[in-house]
Length: 353
Image: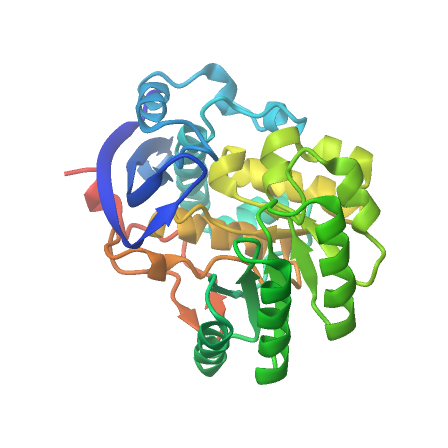
């Protein structure tokens, strides 16, 4: 069945630099699906917001949504390591299908996902981290203090754009200035020697984990960094080589899961199950998505009931959104919507006139 789709454009609060371009807006599609029940037709709404470099291009996303492949009816292909060629499009389609199913059952999406993934039951709220971008030592400390004052007790610091000595000074200054869990994201910027020095220093000052200290495909190097006193997390590696390769190489203590890039909330929950069974903790994040997909990611995080703070406090990166935020951050956590489906009928009028 082809979905009902409506395009949208959301301005970013600040431009985002990627490997090959600068992005100042997020373009995507709201995706509407209908489910027939004994009492009538139930709507489901999804969101497909491609981010080139992580997912397909906008035009490819639209083409896939207008002619969805039969394989999108199933989770197995993605769960078994088959990365969809248009993950954002599949995400929008599957979120809409699952939203309609959960609404028809009268249950929150998180409960449906937990049941499908074999998890014991969804949590009622999800702790989230604040992201502190690159800046001078003083700027980094000021941003960290602002985040802690806003209620966050977990901070993710971006590193790798400056010299290692400068980054080490920034991280140490934050550890001295605030009482919060600190994790580091290098986005694959370091070589093995630099990463080893960084990890050893982070171990001495109590950093929780370092995310993607080496390029995505350097799995043996990532594996060698483990066990030095700081956990190793992978993000780009998940997309570049797949979860099974990461597990086979023993390359991670933590894996970052982006439902939009993995191909849907069901694919993300299936991936989380495989990771957890192997002793690797999943952390759910977004790709700077609109409100519908952010809410879906919150349901994913709630379904897997992890203790780690997730990277879901990204609504502030948008200057405009699809509507009122259904998953606002309050004191460093997000309450999981407890109505039927993802966010009930809050966005139905954006898809159906």
